[in-house]
Length: 459
Image (tube, rainbow, N blue to C red; front, top):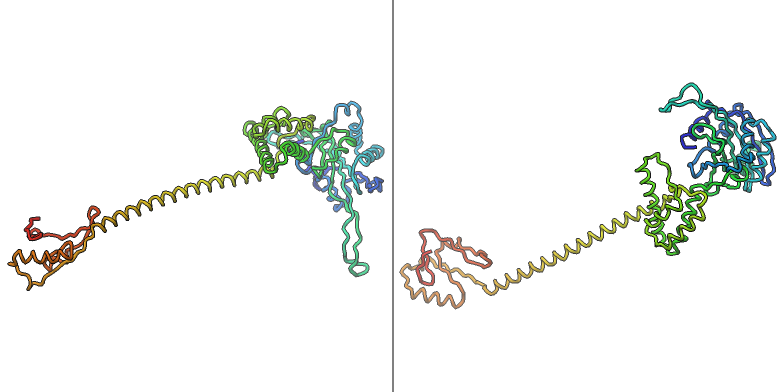
């Protein structure tokens, strides 16, 4: 049965579409004694009871296929013996009207079911007129076949919690009476399976609420089928094999375990990419597990250990790869990879920053060296400038060279350079760095003459 076929049955579990003909059952105490039996025409139940029982039936077809819903098959020997399979066929054909068959079935469940506590066994009978569907899933008027089946649910019955409550008869608050409450089913099944929208008497769709505790004793002893592990059980056993083979180094084993999980996930992705979303699931056999382990980076010694343990555990029924995926581990691994990429980026940025700092320091040192060199040159060629501007009354155009020489000699004793200019030229004089040297710049017009150290100079 696939998800689509299960939903087709569940959608009929409504007030206006339900066709359950009869419901039978028995209530069993903790000592495995039958306390009461019940037999009801289902459609005649009061609404409150009708919907409660209907909810139990729905629960028996809920959960994940391969984990909560397991398709069991009768072994060839069981079919040949015509034992438990024929008993179930008899219940179905009798439409739950044969009390002898019902009692035998109840006793078979009670003797096989490993449960400490009270429980309720319920059996529903239904006949579903399967309508023919076109390729676009449109229903046609004519029916394809009548799918007749029984649905069984085994529900725990527990005592309600002790609590205070309002006692209306006594008009006071007191201890409330504790009741035995029927809970959702722990175990259930549908026989025959609804495969390809028809009856499959060779299979049973088995329901377990707790995927870690599937009650294989019921599968084998009560139903006569080969027991089957849930996806949760397969995953736990596979993880145990891996961790036991890897060793006690927690950090190393965790990394290797995550690598294996990632490789398994890649196998599923590759299968979907190549064969599409409707691809057949990949079975992890003893032959292809070696490739997965080698691809995950495991040593030859560890690979051999895992192969040996895997073959011992799953030789009869190799699991589907998807059942072995630990989604939590994949999320942790993805987060670890993100953190590792972030650390690599931070390290790369730190290296770039360190290189930039080194280049900045180098540039600063070169700039400081250049500044020191320039300062030294300026110090060596220190020029102190004094400009003397005689008054117009003191200027004598006929002053002889000897007078000028005396002035120059006197000035040179205190300064390296002595300038004598007309007052109107003073504002035009400025200092300027030319070719790395400090210079005195005096603009000269075309009609102006210059005298340097008493010598007329044409500039």
